[in-house]
Image (tube, rainbow, N blue to C red; front, side, top):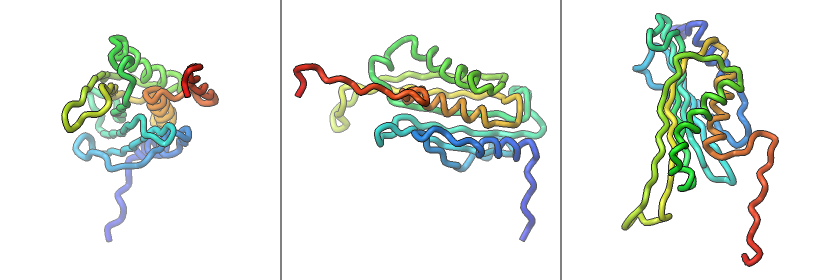
Length: 190
């Protein structure tokens, strides 16, 4: 049996930082297989955000490491994410949504002190209407946020906390410690 291959210290420290974070209770994290062709070393997490026993947002966070560095990354580590959530139709159709979605990411990283550079990505909003055999709700809306950035340090705990904040924002969760008020029924409702 061959001895295990030693991981580069930078990558091992980065993975340890990701594994050290405990997200808020509504966010379920799971280690999943990482794509192997993007970099010599990779690690991935998937997440599901639960609200009232419903999955309302999902995401994947991938850590890439190339010890030789990568010019476009401006470093040796790169975080790549994909987050998606279903939204109310009026919110999903708001022309300001892409800008708001992007600030959910950048503000979350900044608030957690997750220093980064070379950040880039896309925010996609979609509206769908079902017909025929797929008939269902009259319309549905979604947001997808795809982004990547280079962390300034190998301690990635703050980056994962920022990513979890992004997931919570897309899911419409209140900030930790804040309880959402129940919706009131109108006086004529039974």
